[in-house]
Each structure stands twice: as C-alpha cells, then as structure tokens.
Length: 406
Ligand code: AMP
Ligand code: GLY
Image 1 (cartoon, rainbow, N blue to C red):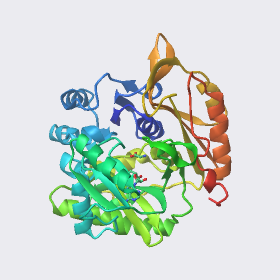
Image 2: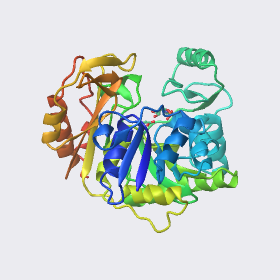
Image 3: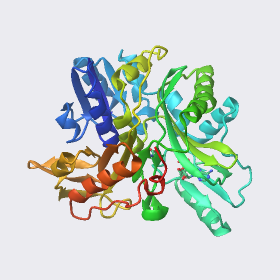
C-alpha cells in the first residue's frame, strides 16, 4: 500500500515511524516531511496547505491512503479536496474540523451532544477563561483570576481580531484522549498527559507542548471506555446529524475535576507531542486502522496497546516559544538512539549534509520501558547525549507520575 502523509513535525515523524512497521506498507511518501521522515520514505517539497499540489501528488503516486497531520490544512478543507479527487483520506472535512477551528462551534456541538464540558459564562466575571474563537496556535487562551488579567485578556482577544468565548475556570489534572473515528464509531487510543508550559513546575508561557507520557494512571481502561462513550461518540453522532460526519482523529482535551471529567477542547487531529508517547505503545497495525476509518468502517478493527510506559521529552530551541532557531548543527542523535530511545524530528533541516535546527521544538525524544520511572530515566539519559547550541528541555516530564504503578 502507498501512503501519503501530510505534515512535517514530530507528530508526523512518529506516524511515519509507526506506519513503517506495518506489513501492509509498500511505499511511504510525505509532503513536505522532514529529515527524520526522509529516512523512512520519500519527502516531496509540497506545503501542507497546498491542496492542488497534494491532489496531483496523490493522483500520480497513486496513494491508497492520504493522512493529514496538522489542523491548518484540515480546517482549510484540504481533506475535502483530496476526497473529491478520489483519494481515501484519514482526516476530517472542513465542516467537521470546525470542532477545533471554532471554539463557539465546539461549545454548541458539546451542548447539543450532552457532553460534560466547562460551562460557558454569559458575563465576564473572574475567575474565568477567555478563549479566542479561531485557531490561535495556543496563544488564544487566557486564564483570568484577577480583574486586571480579565481586562488584559479581553484586550488581547480583540487585538487578535477574533470573537471569543468565556467559560468557568476549572481545576484539576489534564489528560488527552484520542479516538480514531470512521464518521460514526471510534476506537480510543491510550490516554496521555501533555506538558503545555515552557518551564519546570508548569511555569512560563504556553507552548505547543514540551513533553508527554502514557499511560496515565488517573484513566483506567474502564474509564477510557467510558470517556469514549460519553464524550467522543456523542460528538460523532452530533456531527453526523449536522451533515458533517467526522472521519479522522478526534482529540478530547479533558480536565479531571473533583466533579468528574470535563472537556476543555476538541482537536481534529493527532496531538503533538502526545502522539510521540502513544504510538510507540501501539502493538496493532495502525495503518490498517487508519485505512478502515478512512473507508468508513472500523467495526472489525482492534488496536492492541502494550503495557509498557512511554515518556517523550521535547528538546526545544533556546528562545522557544518567543522565537525559533535555524542552522545550528545538531549532534548526538545516533548515540541517543543507540541507547534504545527513539528520536523524532520536529524542527530540523539538512544543510550541506549536516542536520541543523529549523524551528522552535527541534527534537522529541521518546523512551519506552516496563515502568514510567524507567522510561523517564531512559528518555532523559538520551536527551543528555543530544546537543545543539541553546538546546533546552523540561526536567520534570512525568516526574510526578513515576511513583504510580503503570
Ligand atoms: P484549549 O486550547 O481550550 O485547550 O486551552 C489551552 C489550555 O488552557 C488547556 O490545556 C488548559 O491548560 C487551559 N484551559 C482551557 N480551558 C480551561 C478551563 N475552562 N479551565 C482551566 N483551564 C483551562
Ligand atoms: N499537545 C497539544 C496539542 O496537540 O494541541
């Protein structure tokens, strides 16, 4: 089978790495891909939002399955264009991707589906959370505990030129639960926990994600099933009823509050970096599952997950998230991998035969082991072998979880 993977980050490298293990895979192609993905398949210099060129590539290969990784092309309707041109696509239509593309739409769907979610507030009053309606790459959410913070948040969302929603500020631990969806049914993947802030102890500004681990002891297998039943499936039914069935990866970002789980957000694609900690635990054939979903029938598909634990540490550029870095040589990946870790490329490039930095989040180092403690130790031992000027990473990924038996 020939697969075309759209995207260029660590999430896409992890997808490529897992797909490459499928007995069904004959050829892997990526657009645009990255130097890590290039070791597993052929990269084509096509931007992930260039629908026309992607259609042409999918047709010429021809690709049996197209997997769209990032949210921007999905919200822009690239999956629709590819489907109209006859490709089997794993990734929702623009109409279904609004579940991520518009916070107001997501709230409406959650309300109609009866999904437990953070309550919307009609009047801005502290404590609350102000969220810009559209895609804002993590920069559109403001936690307001004081009136000053609320005033600043309202100014900031206005400056983004967006409408906004205001909701109650919830307390609790967060968890990400992904389901592979075929429009009506879904297959839950193992839960993962993401670390959104740049600094240890959750200090500093929000980022795309600085690390992740899986499994999450707070979510038992029975609770995972329950979340699929009470969160993902009602949303799938609601989207189908609205004439926009969701085919792709439905990501629920949840807060585990004292009153039970509450949805904070939905995303219409695999999470980054959670995917890098989840996929190494998947034992079954991911390609088979994504193809079954794209064809609209997951009913005969199962995806076994190992008991192993996985920890992913994001190695970022010196000034991330304020700015990215490019052209700084990277050393030590081979040594890190020789010790058993997997190093996913997130923001790298090849220049004059050398691997260099090219982004904010540069590498994602994942290690698996029988326990989270061991996986964590291995991941950090691997990070210590990697070097580039200004490399930074959080030291506390999975730290508070290691004493919990996985
Ligand atoms: P979102 O893009 O909606 O997931 O928001 C990004 C991050 O903001 C979440 O991962 C949470 O850490 C935080 N957040 C969002 N909504 C709430 C809420 N209602 N209460 C507390 N924290 C929230
Ligand atoms: N890890 C957060 C996200 O993918 O949105």
